[in-house]
Image 1: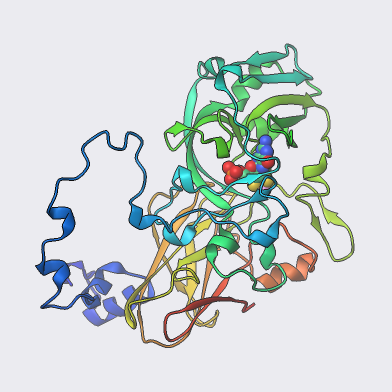
Image 2 (image 1 turned 120 degrees about the vertical axis):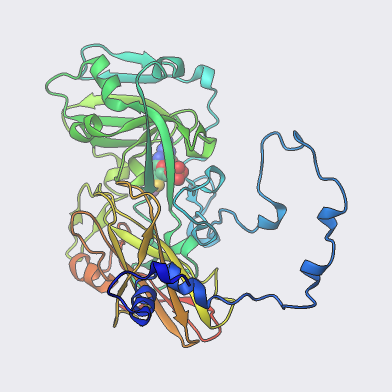
Length: 426
Ligand SMILES: Nc1nc2c(c(=O)[nH]1)N[C@H]1C(S)=C(S)[C@@H](COP(=O)(O)O)O[C@H]1N2
Ligand SMILES: [Mo]
């Protein structure tokens, strides 16, 4: 450890203590021991097969793919959740990822009628309803409007829904994997609506998908004119078919269901349509039988991705890195707290990487594990001052009937062997 890194007025011991509690990496690096044997390790002493022959040349993989050693890193579904894979969901392997970008091939999928394979040459987007001039756009047309790039998370409102009544699924992939974070390239929806000329009475928008489910959602005009995008690229390349190729709607910070894929029609109206996906679905039934209507914004949430049930601690006691993700549909995440003892003591995590509104944030907490069992939790604070609630606090307000919008604090029990399990401490 470099002593220059000690701030003036702080003793080295003070610095070590605060750094460990604050998740400071600089001090912690001093205590990291390596796991390989100092002498006699064939992995360093012997010439390995990949150094004994020439490898594939360029163009062997004109569109690259991950190392075969990474084949366990994949989207997974939960068989018993849905009757049929065409109206189903799979989950992002959050425990295998780091940083804040979700690779395109690992973005969770949620389809109501399978993946529509749309021919871009036959693709059209129509704007009709309460407009001066109904319009039909091709992709070429869309690309002539001013383009923008934004990194946004998409979270399905049903993410963590299976955990509402108690701990159920063993892995953050399954409890929290209905989220992805992607850099979108597209045009502001506002430009298209302005071109069509929204009539004064036009206060709502119906977005419709081109897939066989013809998914529709009502969106208030205020949001449509604010930050919604009509996107055609994700992380630099064309949208994947799973994510709505060739064009999807991006509704920053709002529930994933509104981000209509394979976008084909935008109708302007004077009131919401109250279609299936905004009434019988994606609505929270309260204890007294009433339902919460139009719960669009995704509240602040966080999850420890490592360690977690699919990613145990394998190195034994000593220096340990905890990592996780936090996000809010209302802004940025300036702070995440981590507890090792089920909420008795909380320590600030170290936020790392870009902090962008309505985007995933990465946090780390570095500490010395003494080998005792842990009850790990994280708690997000967003830029509005909102603090992520416990599951009990949520249930007190919303009852037991809910499925959607579970942003409660998640607990992992880690035993003295480092094996992690989904439990609830509320
Ligand atoms: N056309 C269409 N759009 C859709 C859906 C769909 O089935 N059809 N599913 C919605 C739901 S419920 C969610 S959570 C998101 C999922 O986006 P993803 O598949 O890119 O993860 O897309 C939304 N847009
Ligand atoms: Mo969803």
